Length: 135
Ligand SMILES: Nc1ncnc2c1ncn2[C@@H]1O[C@H](COP(=O)(O)OP(=O)(O)O)[C@@H](O)[C@H]1O
Ligand SMILES: [Mg+2]
Image (cartoon, rainbow, N blue to C red; front, side):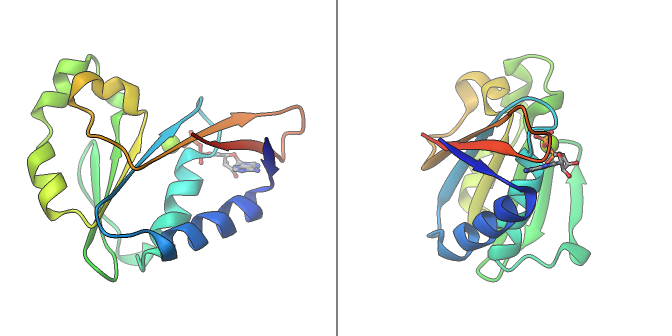
């Protein structure tokens, strides 16, 4: 079990982003406020994304330009039911994306692609720390 401060989480995310091979598909689980988006943004930075140029495409999918190619942040939080995930262009995301970062993956149900990395974030007693697990 690892407990991390926010800056440690960002540092880990950036280092991970710098080392991810093309085609990586990462899943992030954890309750609201656990730090998933914070971690994802740091990973994107490590992939060469300049957050100033981040441009949301539509509600669920954010497309960022990384140094090797597009980085897609897919936030399934707003999916009402797994069948709504069918309407996401998974084929296009898998074809065009250098890396996919998927938040609330279980809401995509059977449409979820096979992951290469899975992370869980959770609150602990200290509000400045989070538990980070890789599975
Ligand atoms: N150790 C920590 N790691 C990550 N976030 C932290 C930490 N401590 C405090 N925070 C705060 O918790 C919030 C996490 O928000 P966010 O990353 O959007 O979570 P999620 O996407 O899981 O809902 C941020 O406001 C962040 O500043
Ligand atoms: Mg989030």
